[in-house]
Image 1 (spheres, helix red, strand yellow):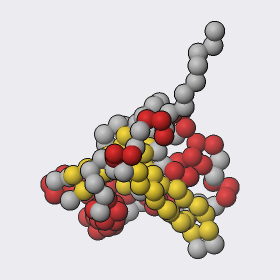
Image 2 (tube, helix red, strand yellow):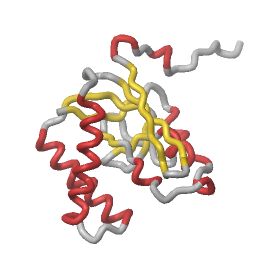
Image 3 (cartoon, one colour):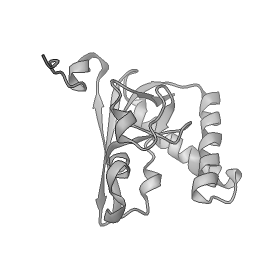
Length: 159
């Protein structure tokens, strides 16, 4: 089974997200956070989180890139508990037990998204508000073709 972990190529996520995800933490899309959002909610760092932030399961932070990697079933079980507790704390779910099936579905969706990709494949997410709600699209960057040049801005130091 596969899932995705937060990965950073530079420190930009520290500046663009209100709460950045920690390097190496497991991530899901996290589109649930935006289910009731409208145009008025899309400002500043919240807009950046909406536009392209994956959701870190341990910090509740956001990250721009995730890398596909293998995960053990016991770890998936722990993550389902963690996400269910998040739903109780931040979204008013009546109990972790009631939230657990939703958390499992969120993890299952992410595992399906990662399943057909080789390990270390990078994924990005892009979101848009539509008449029907939030639309997510995903892009993958194969590990052999991914290079730092795709993500880093290069310049020359001032004299």
